[in-house]
Image (cartoon, rainbow, N blue to C red; front, side):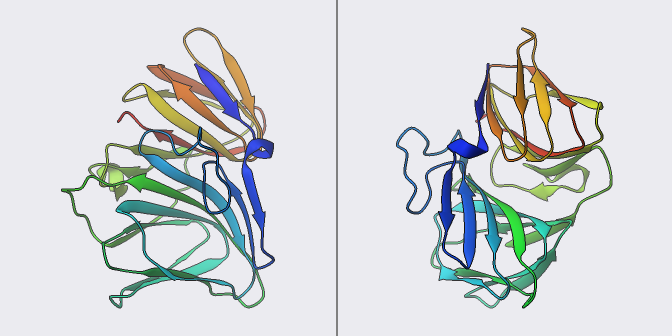
Length: 233
């Protein structure tokens, strides 16, 4: 089963220095039916104005994945760790109790656009505090996984995140690890096919809940950039 969540259905915010779209309940946006999906707690697309910052704050024990779409950001924690990430890179932060984290748009002239995901972390597992990977110019890249396979970022959870970048008319098939996944269109239009021949079309900014499908085929109706988040747990 595939259930679409369109961009127009998502929560929104415009604070001047920050424009945001929230897939799940976040900040002032609250929907008791959308508190997350499996271990996926947050999926936001946010635009920070030139020179804007998120001031230091603490988090629950989650893995925070920042996929930089435009611009360059710097991330710091209260233990003195810091890292920069730019468009075409993804950064994973393994949050720690008692530590606060900040984010800064390094440009004084250009906005910073990124996707941010929070994933519940297994309580007994620890990974490197900050990991970064560059996106390859390939149709599909394993961006994050439980074991860091194929050079991917290593998560503290049984989740596989795929970055998809394909031309119009191209298609990809994915074998899923379990009964749940989430598909997010970043740019472009795609339709998803499953065994029952069901099709759902997603356009820019739309997402879709995927349930009880062993595999799924994605067909790009336009040039497509998307994320497929495989969430068996």
